[in-house]
Image (cartoon, rainbow, N blue to C red):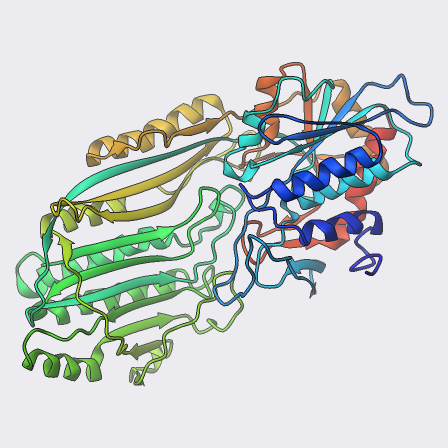
Length: 573
C-alpha cells in the first residue's frame, strides 16, 4: 500500500482514511467500524468507552508538558451516506469503495470514489482523530476523541449519547466542509411525514384505457442543506407540474375534465438528499391520449429550457405501456400508435455528462427525431416491454386532488439569513413521496409525503414547522405516527476562550482573519450543547463539495491546512 494516494493528502491521515474506505460504514451499518475503533483505542492502552447506542470515546492523556491544559473533545461521526450510480456493481453494505483522483483546472486535485459517495463526510474527521491518537510528537493537553454514529439519520448518535461520554469544556467538531472558515452556528432540523388515503377503483383491460409511465430522472441532487439554494429541480414537484399540464390540455381541447387516473407515484430517498428521480404510473381514456400528450410535451419543453443551466443530465420520459387486451383488435390499434408516437423522451443536449444518477435506459426498437431543428434535444421513443395493465388506480377526482397536493407541497428556500449573508436561513426539502395500494381492502391507496425542514433560529424553526403542518391540514393529510424527529439549532459566542485560541491559530496557519460562518445543515454541536450545556463549540474542516452524491469531492489542496489548523489549536491552549 502506498503511503498516500496523492502528495497533497497528508500521509498520516491517508493511512486511516484508506482503512475507512475499505470498511462499510453506511448509517445503521457501523458495527464493523465500531469494532475497529475500539480495537484501535485498546491497542494504545487508552481509556476507551462505548455507550449503549454505539458512540465511542477514546481519551488520550496530555503529552509533552501540557498536563495542566484544559481537556478538549474533538468529534467526528463514523457513518456516511451511501449512494451509488445505477450501473455501479459495488455493494455498499459489504464492498470497499474505490478511490480516484480527478484533476480540476480551478479547484486542483480532487479525491472522489468510482460510482459511489466518497465518505469524506465525515471520514476526514475520523481519520484526523485516529492520527491524533497515534501522534507522539504533538504537544497537547488531555483530549477526548469522540466518534458518534448515525449522524446522517438525524444525529441519532448525538441524541442518544451517554451522559458520561463528554467531560471536556471545549469541543471541536470536524464536520465543516469549507476550508478557511470556522463555523459557529448551524440549523435545526424537523423531519415529518404526512399521509392521505384516497379512493381507488379497478382498471379494466380494454381498448378504452391506455396506461403510461412518466419519469423524471437523473436530477443533479445534492445535500438538502448546503445545496437547497442552488435552484436544482425537484423531480417530485415536476411530476405534479407535468400531469397538471396534461389535464389542462384535455380541458382546453375536449371541453371536459381529464380522465387521468394515477396508479402509483414515487420518488426521492432520504431526508438530507435532494430527490434524484420520480415516477408516476397513470391510466388515461384512449380518446384523450393525444390531447393529454400534447400538454405534457409542451410542459416538458419549458421545464428543460428552465433547468438547462443547472440540470444538464436531467431526463424526462412519458412512455406508453403496451399490453395485450382481452380481445384481439386492441393489440393492432396499440401497435399502430406504438410506431407513430408512443412516448416522448426529452433530455438536454449535454446529457452525456457524468451524473451521480446515471441510469441504464431501456433500449428501444424505433427512434425518430422530431423534424424541428430547435427540438434537436427531443426524441420519440417507444418501448415494447410487455407490461401488464394495472389492476387499480385512483379515481379521477382523487387523481386530480393528488396532483394539486404535489404541486403545492412546500419545497425550497423560504428565507435567506440577514445575520450570515449568503446563507440560507429557512428551507424545506420535499424529499420523498410513496404510494401503497390497500389491495386487501380494495378501496383506497395511502400516499405519504415526507419533508425535512431546517432553520437557523428557534423562532424560524417553529414557523417552518407550522408551514408544513398547515399544508397537511389544508390538504387533509394526517401525520404518520412516530415520523416526526427534531434536533435544535446552534449559535455560539465569539467571546469565549475557545474562540480566542481558534482565532489566533487561524491567523497563524492561514495568514488572515478567520471567516465566521453558519451552515444550513445540522451539526451535532447543537445536540451536544443541549446535553452538555457547559460546552463551547466550533466546527472546522477541509473543503468537500457535492456531499451525499456520487460527485462527492474532497479538495486535496485544503487537506494540509485543515490538519495544521487542528494541531495548532491543540498546541495553543
